[in-house]
Length: 387
Image (cartoon, rainbow, N blue to C red; front, side, top):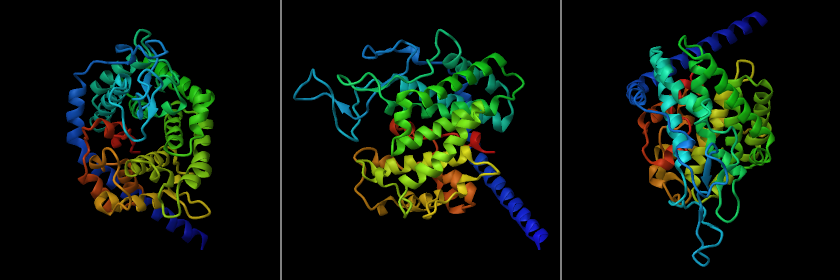
């Protein structure tokens, strides 16, 4: 009896693996033309790092990443005083040059690594590491591996732990390095130095008070802390941190953030509940994608009261096919720009072999142009995340 059960389990696992492989091929075929087009453009681009522009309001050096709180504005009753908050409404006068440079970096390296993965052409690797060297290695242009001055607020603080969410765009850089590190043309010194940068940044994220504060955040900020720390630890092979992230997902994020119906109540309370719900689900799905192993597939993890990532996708999916069904008020900004080709759709479809989810992902926009959408879509290159 035991042998029969073992055989059945093996056959079922093989069938599931084969189906996932089929989905992976479809995903790569869907994106192939776009990847090659973006990579062709990326081959023409030169590195731009945080040293290219410096904001006079920054308390840091030219090597320090700097950004300003999105929803903070001048006080009309006290124009020279501290800024005041207007939740959900982005101040267009904020300094965003470093954020845009990091997103550009992520897009370029992600496109080049994707093209390398589907073609094997090492020209893409060589070009990608020009950018990686500029950001993490070259002493004249590198970024310091810390985030002391992110999401500052004029008249209040020079930086905040909440700003750590800005570096979610380094995830695809870390994953790209993993994809390319076995290439024959790779510069080993650059590879070692870039991994050292991510190891140093991970150490800062897990020991500095800003990092500890962000880890404790109860909403999408806490989710994104786990997501990016898991990504960076995966690159550097930090098994202790990977295990910590896995346990935090199981014991803190999923049980405390998800409601019984699969929604995220803390995101639904915001002035942009639709966009924040999409964003948080994307982040949780990426945690599952990054941390799952053959021995511990957290895609399948379920809490004692029935919360699981599949329920989160099932809750939000109907509102990606027909947004008019959304039960709450429209978001105060960018309502018309969502949804796009979200990670939760493509990776959820592959894991759970759900054809409807994959078809919906295929039909949505894979190359959004709106800056706020791009900013809240840190995973834009699914190919480099496929096993």
